[in-house]
Every structure is written in C-alpha cells, then in structure tokens.
Image (cartoon, rainbow, N blue to C red):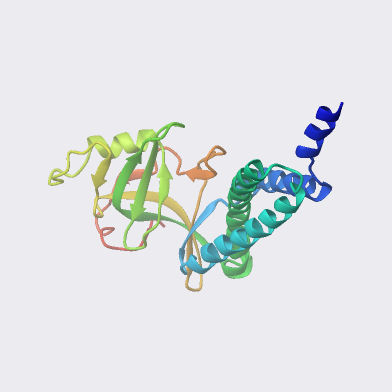
Length: 235
C-alpha cells in the first residue's frame, strides 16, 4: 500500500497542467480549419513581419507553458520532470505555430484585400525554378515564381509536364530540379488591391501538411511576352 501511494505521488499532475495540455490540443485541432481557410499566398507586401510575430508569440506561449508544466509536475522525479517539460514545451511551440500562422494569414488577407477595392483576374506567373522534395509522407513538387519569389506547390502531373518539356538549353539533368528562368508559367487566379498582390488557390488542399496545390494543368510553356514579367493578364 505504501509503495502504491508513493507511485501516485510521483506521477501526480495538477489541474493547471491538464488544462494546458487541453489547450495545446485545441490549438493543434484549430490548425486544420485555419489552414483550409488560408487559401492564398501573398506576394506583396512582404509578410516577413507577420511570420516573425507568429514565431515570437509561439515562443512566448511555449515559455509560459514550460513554467506551468514545471509547476504541474512538482511531485515527479527530477529526470522525468525535465524531459517531460522540454518535450511538451516544444509541442506547445509547434501547435502554436500551426494555428497562428494560417490565422495570421487570414487576418492579413482581410486587411490588405478589402472586397470594395480588390480586383480578381487570371494571369500567367513566370517560374524561375521548380524542385521536388522527398519525405516519408510522400513527394512534393514546388515552383518558385520570378521576380516575385515564393513557394507554390503543384501536382505531380504538372511536375512531369515540366520535366519532359524542360528547356532544350537547360544544362541540368537533375530529375529533382528544373531551371525554368521564365520558360514555364503558372496559370493562376490573382487578386490586387493597391500595392498588395496575392495568388488565390482553387486546387487541392492537403490537410497533412496544411498546404494548397495549384490544380492540374496550371503549368504551361510561357506565352510570348510573359518572360521577365511579374504577371501577365490572360484577359
């Protein structure tokens, strides 16, 4: 009986710690709907400040979580306590990032693209480079527009289109990297409001990595006049 009571004392967990873990779970759950609603990539203005703020806020929450979890595990052996707090603090940081980033993108979109002054149009977006990434969850295919740089995911069919039609003077033979330099373009839906410009996705949403892909058929050889332009309207 004494041994059982001692074991319970060692694994005791306060109410505040339990509430914190529930909060982390809610943040992680919210990342799914927030990610699906954040269906745009802003090209201008630069959203570096928003990203920095998201990381800073997640860091503050992780530090606060470490303090709460340290108090919540006061009855634990020190070795177990340190490992648990470090691991859960990292998970807190990750859950915060996954929720805050798409939420910040949605809010930023509302601010920079008010309905009254936003124009929507179809355009060709010249591609500077394309590459394929390998991971345990599967391959991904990414294009980087030029001169307005960002990362945009495409489908495997469009990757294969570029791979089999790469420029004759492209000296690269790497199957995971294509140097387009304006040879290929992405047909995209764009929005403009003042100096703000963004791409709107109507393609596939992947809930496993919280990203959109352009629909199959979005990649074409650039029409004449598209090379070197930030975008070229179709109509």
